[in-house]
Length: 279
Image (tube, rainbow, N blue to C red; front, side, top):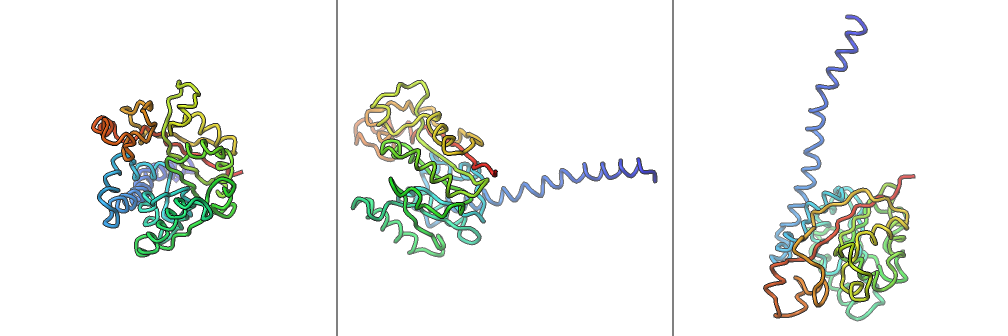
């Protein structure tokens, strides 16, 4: 067989192999998504928490961020552990889940929430594995993890708190420091329309403009890698009497117009994926 014929044969073999390689790779991502879905709908979760999957889309969100079971993942301010119930079971065998929780020297309420969280994960090691708990807050942002130790840092509906407390830029710098080169920062946050004026009322609403989050992340060194509309809610006008807390699950207005706000559902949210440059 001539050299030309051999080259042509090798090219045909390579082309024929491409679909097979694609089919072989696809189930791996499907398997990860299936593991996330199993955790999101697991028996360890309350019916109330599972019902909120419809608003928070954990499978689609974590798949978009690129979660893998062998990663070291730091979740910032996990609160009562809604996302912990999804992340920790996926990571417990081959990865590591780190909860950067409240300052242990903070307010009594913050201390109680932190203690309750620790008791929750320690009471069910078969589900959560060995959860590491670090600290996060104003002035101790760098305590979330060792420099360059994390494959992924995740935060869900927290940026407005840091903006209000005046330490959001330092928080993003801490996330950058904790990540390995090439690591991912995933952000979900209540979204303020870009055309809203910069007023005290809007700053206290719990909503933040996407452009502001991107600006702070890029100032810390991150590159925007993608945006998803998986957590969008076009019913949310972001102009409620008591800000985002007017909507479920808080219902800050009590029984006043409760059906109206229940019909809107949880807030409209941005979903942003940033990457720490590899070099």
